Length: 481
Image: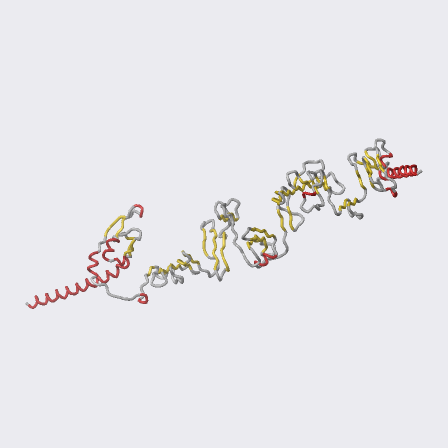
């Protein structure tokens, strides 16, 4: 009696299970089901259940409405072994999505590699297989997505065409061991802070204007870190004029700016040109008097320097100051040598020229536009140990004026003057010598010979006056006889 009751219970429960969970078996003769029960088995609880295919859901129980490859209202794909109408929960009794997994792994393909994972608690593992995510209502469209863990150790994010076209990688993560080597985006645009990127990398910052290094550091559009074992620097992409003037700033903190280098290993930098031919190649506007470059700290108070072109009728390049009252200084070894003031006066070794050309701070010469002539500095304020020139006439007699012809490389013209080396033997004060060629002169100051000539004329005049007196005396004596 006990055996018969168990058999009836097994048969009735089996029939119920078949009706509820395997409705296709009632409509498809080729299906086979094996159900193993153990007494006692109340409430339809079974230790093992096996089926070739299974459809689970309130609507799927109707074999006439849902069937595999038959002539019913809704045909189930013959490749589908399990279809579920509602949510599936694994590790949870309250699945909130089509598939909810709580507290364990999901292994797709192959055997579990849980022992090789760092924590042993991975939520999902892909082994040379795809995880496809399809657009709602259109699983066969090109808008579907896929994820693959490749045999090469790459993690691939892909556009998954569901049999149409070619699978394309849109993000590839490559690694060596546990270290991520590269993250690349082979195609498409990447947007940060916006939803429709218009470039390969499109970063949208906030409506913020940086007015200091601290602003640029704390609220940049982007911050790129360059770190080493010793140094830690950042390249900041910021905005300095409310979205109209993006700027680059190098820094290591909110209070420490760093140097910024372009092309340290070679190459040219172009501004306004796509084909720079020099280390710095600047192309300005093709208009008259257009400024090509400006260097300044505060125009009008600290000075500015600019380069601009000329006009089509006067194709010159202008180099100079741009402010109304600024002066231009040129120097060597960090010292000023030449100055041009706002009036156009030029000073050589003179920082406050008062004439068109002024030489030296004091005692030098200058060119005056009032009389259109050159003036040598000669004030008694700048002189001492003043003495008359003695024996001027004797010195003059030692000088030799000559006609000569310049060598071809120096013009080849006929001329008149002195030989500086000969003059130097008589008047070394008027000759300058070449420090690189001993015994040879560079030139002489002809104007200084004027003082010698004056004194020579005076000495000669004394002789003339003496001769005149002597002649007068002789005439007087002759007259007396």
